[in-house]
Amino acid sequence: MPQVKIIAKNFMDMVASLPALKLDKLYDNTFICEAVLRSLPALAKKYVLQLLFIDVTVTGKSLEEWLLQDGFSKHRVAVDRLVQLRVFLESVDRKKDSSYRLNPKFQINLQKYLVHGGVLPREPMPSSITVRLPTLEELDAYALEQWECFLLQLISSSQAERPTSFSSSMMKIFQRGLLSQREKEAPRLTVNGFQFLLLDTNAQLWYIIREYISNSEDRGVDPADLISFLLELSFHVTGEAYNVNTLTDIQRSTIKDLADLGLVKLQQGRKESWFIPTKLVTNLSVSLSDSSSRKQGFVVVETNFRTYAYSTSKLHCEILRLFSRVEYQLPNLIVGAITKENLYTAFENGITSEQIISFLQQNAHPRVAEKTPSVPENVTDQIRLWEADLNRVEITPSHFYDEFPSRDVFESSCDYARDNGGLLWEDSKKMLLVVKAEIHMQMREYLRSQK
Image 1 (cartoon, helix red, strand yellow):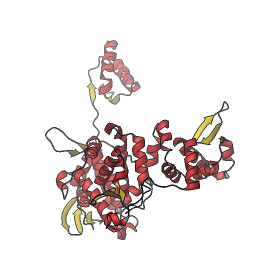
Image 2 (cartoon, rainbow, N blue to C red):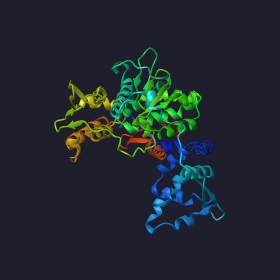
Image 3 (cartoon, rainbow, N blue to C red):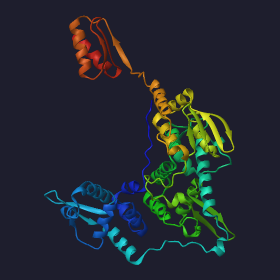
Image 4 (cartoon, one colour):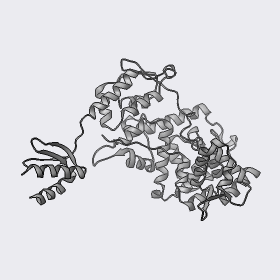
């Protein structure tokens, strides 16, 4: 069974993966420098601030003198991260000793930012123009509605509660990774698509953003410019209105795509139009390890495999259908059961038992989340056992050999198959042999040589 996992990187991993020239170009923006500084491990931040006004290289041994005896492991992690992000420029002498200095662009811009402060390229619009803006609660509800509608569109366009017009940029991301489509057939979820739906919201968002940036060159957009704009948006104030006319054409196109995801809300006035950042976009530079933005759990699993999901979300209902039987749905309660048949369907679609268990644990209702374990052990054990049922038999293409002319030929053939890593089974009494299909041609040539 395929074991495909989606790896959702954080923003700084994407920044570090850029070519050196594009990475240095990013550091022309003081807000990128601040975002990078915020993302660094504590010890790395200390090194940056201590070297910020030093214009000469510092040897690695000098840095180590600042450490306590138990700090060398953290030191190595900090220095590696600084080198990956080109905050530190490393040089190695003939004795293979390393020296470091701050990236000049990063250093100059961070100095200016700390001394003089920074001003965003755009200021919030006055309330006299925007009149009434949504409250933070309304904005959170809008972002959640947009995101769920987006995911429902992924599961099936017929599941969306209202018509959607997602941009071709977003749909191409689905087609490449999460959806597949044959001629004259509706799009279907891939293995990655099924697994994607069980990820938490942070991981899902990062997957979409990572793919959106990775495919930006196909749309004629420089990935470095896109990363710069997205990180810049993370410094805007949630709930404030910003004039769309301050954006470039590429940035306007990006804003429309982000509105599809619920990262920003677009509004139109009599003369002006503006965008309002939601928490999803202002938290973009937060690491995936931060769980503060995760939603409250809603699922209760009982020892008899019954599930109770206290939710009004149609998306939650569709996700539960991926691995359980939904029996009925009340206005704020989804009742179902985890069955062998539904789990087999999930396993065939590429979802693993560990992903299902992880989903149930991460989304456990607060009343049961405090318990240990939050999902009954008999349920988790049975889910793993049902998956193991499908893995008991492994099919390996092979070839069967019999009627050897002599025992010597049989034994030498066994040795040959064993030496080439292709021996699957042998019966020395009856002189029977089974080898992997991949060495069949070699075995044929070997047996011919023995004649």
